Length: 444
Image (cartoon, rainbow, N blue to C red):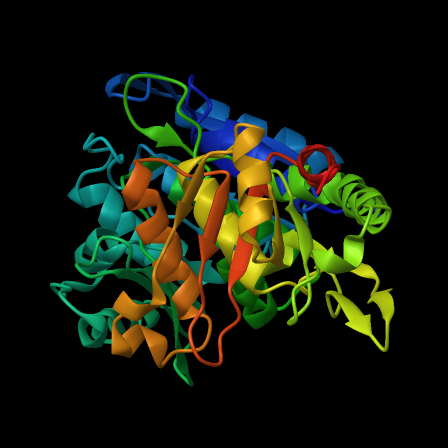
């Protein structure tokens, strides 16, 4: 069954936002995309030079032509550059009973203003009463509600006022609030839910378009509002983390990342399985397996969580003189997965890691093969970090990088009472990593 979503928005020639980004986002959710163009723009990643609104009568003709032929499962709006265009969209939504997501784009990321007070009034009077979900950022929510938003309580107050315009659900995006985290609010009058994510460095062009288009695609494919919002919130960090640097200005959103990751899953699983088999054929392999077990792991092309990293379930272990290894799956590695994620943030080429029992001779063998080596000392680990399970390696990684000014190939530590000394090795993929390690230890 084919689901179709419609975007009613402007054209961004650099492809970072508007209908071009929306259509890519629909594809990510396996939803066919159609469009009605409301404005043409002369813009790049640095600025918008000019906006040329499409005549309202041609917007109407585009919309009617689409609806005469296609079954539209959900529709979203982007730039609506005149009050006449807002009314036309509202009339079609009302007449055809369309599920509507409104992204109230009042100005661009680079600061270009798109609407005047009359257009905003028309939004409130004609469009919002027909809206399933509205997705303002804090500036847009402030304009609609009259509430100056400085914190999470203000977000709720603004959402309450916006809901009174007849909107069914409000999502206030809090990415512009001060703080280390991004906080989004979902509010429907009965409940308010906050979604919190780490704030990434720098602005990104097209983020709002992705968010609203993703919600639209979810609604089009049959998800209810709560399911749609939970689905999209889980994907936001994955997509935002890997913005594309295509010009001299802002990075642009990369909506196809989830598809690219999905396409590579079988290949990554195959890599780790092949690497595991090669590792198990090492001469005296039992000498390299750590007491806590050895992990071999590899990440998808765009990793942002441990569930984007495949590893050996239960690790590789020595049990009663035999070497036992579990199945290769995603999400089963924690320590090596987090090490890969941290390394990948600084060096995107790094996608794989493995850990081995600490041995001075092994370190010398790796050094001989031109591995760059660094270390950290658990004796200097702050107590507040030591008390949190899994945080030691995050701290240790930063110390090891700081020592040599880059991500090393090898990170080791000498342990402490109750903590086994360990060697951890990083590489571009699991197979090449194991082969390179194998070359270093062949005469061990």
